[in-house]
Length: 393
Image (spheres, rainbow, N blue to C red):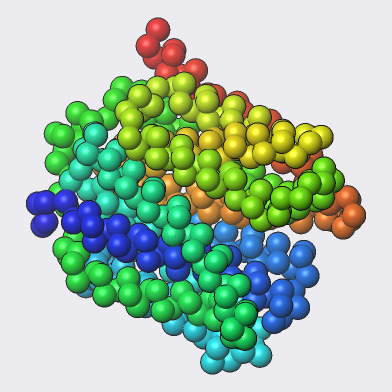
């Protein structure tokens, strides 16, 4: 057993490289399918939803898989194996570029492998750290992965300018995963020991209830994100303006990063219901403002609100999951599975909208369906707070 926490620098290095790989894979795959394989928007929605479902299932199985293989493989060995499988999947289309079967295998195997990787990395990040120490480590984690996922969005256009095959957009994942695998030599075989006494002392009275509410809010935030992404170009075209659409679209990511940075450097937010209430308000108000605003300025305000809500939700949900779950792989798996649910349901709403309203009105129908889903989720998200108040009373 490893008594000390895993070296934070090594964990962050794998986090950075894995996030670059994830950004290349999850963003690049849709460029590849559209440009090389002729996928329609509806078919890409099917692919995205399927990948989200696979991610959710695989993440939820990360803990059981590690226990099943525990006699033969350490967590570090399973992490290395998942990185290797993901790398092989990412280069497979270069070997068989005409095969749709290989393409689908690449997407599904890559989604499953990445879903196994992150719960293990999060366990290495948090195990052996408690309270402020864990919050600080999660802060480093958050300000590492958020900019890293954007790097491939800068590299992919450069590949196109150099005349490289579009398949290299996802093959980039393989290169980065090999580098991440080399960093694993600095990892202990197992995450640090999470002392039960310290772990129990670090779990506030409200934490289990806060975790339940955050567990509703987290997939809802990703559902909203999946809704906004395809609608935003149409909204920007409606209000006009000379600012490039990609620049405006990046505003919510900058707002998310700023909030994650603020939460890392302060401690006022944990253990407070007001944090989740602010996150819910920012998500709903931001989404509604982006969808209804008559001017570019108000759309930007909405994107800032939405990004702030995404940051508040992500940091709080990850912290409560790892704290209440004692930094186990199962805790990270549950957290990642909730993200997968958002990735799955968001594109499904788009498909339902296409089927119900046709291509011309699909964006408007997606908005309506998303708002309905948000309303249906409001009470389940509020219920843990009401139960906690009854217990205190």
